[in-house]
Amino acid sequence: MSGAQRDILIVDDDRQVREVLHQIFLGAGYNCLLANDGREGVEVFRSARPPLIVTDLKMPVMTGIELLRTVRAADQDAAVIVLTGAADVKTAIDSLKLGAYDFIMKPVNVDELLIAAERALERRQLLIERREYQELLERRVVEATRDLASAYRQLQDTYRSTLEALGSALDTRDVGTEAHSRRVHGYTLATAREHGMPETELTDLAHGVLLHDIGKIGIPDAILLKPGALTEEEWRIMRRHPEIGKALIEKIPFLRGAVPIVWAHHEKWDGSGYPRGLRGEEIPLGARIFMVVDAFDAMTFDRPYSKAKPFDLAKAEIERCAGTHFDPAVVESFFRVPEPLLEEIRRHSVEP
Ligand SMILES: [Fe+2]
Image (tube, rainbow, N blue to C red):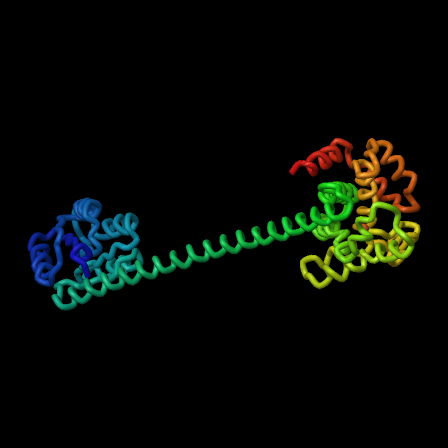
């Protein structure tokens, strides 16, 4: 134990007792500080912060109990041993409730006093170490929780940017339109919210939209990039892309929710679509929403062989196909999306 830790404050109004205690602790190697009463004891404690205090109970100006209270309030680790006469045993027991480590009956037995002092210092050290360990554990838990949350956020970001990169790659390989998937993604979410789709279903919907044409990876470039019209046989191959897409992503757990949209994104309300010829509400809602906004984007954005139409002409065309290609209720929801929001999504998505 270091010298500083063996500092002891002795508080007693009886000069002789004080001097005897002084000699006892001096002889045992302690560095002693002395005080006449409680108030003086508090002053010495405040300036020197000794780890151990031995105090009488009955003293003028300030009692040992008051000293104990003040010292423990200032330092929860202060070890206090109370000295008491036989008449004062009840007060001594009360002092334990206030945080005193021990009490010693007068007349003092030297061995008993020194053992009590050693034990008090050891117990104080244990309590400090235990608290520091507890604090260390708590800090570690906070750090681990923060690391986990940050890792989770990074993972989510990685998923999203991977999907967006994949979406952009599919766009450029296919029709050469930049950011098609991102625009359609924005229009889809706006329409889905207008249609009252629960927020919890929007992530799967977004994944489905970004990946809708992922099956085109399995279509030969000679067909996908052919400048002229496709032959009947080429169309038959081209129409396989929703099934190829479904097979690609259904094995990836976090993309499973996107499967219905990828699989059904060419189905039409009247049953004339592909690959399954689903009709009406047999078609998953996400796919019905996608059909409308994908057609809107195709009409309102320049493509290699067709100029962009103004919004109102595109909307008129969509209105004409409500009930044949499109779910009429979804068309209504799409028309309720404010035009400035559509403009905003369109503008935002072309910026790099
Ligand atoms: Fe497609």
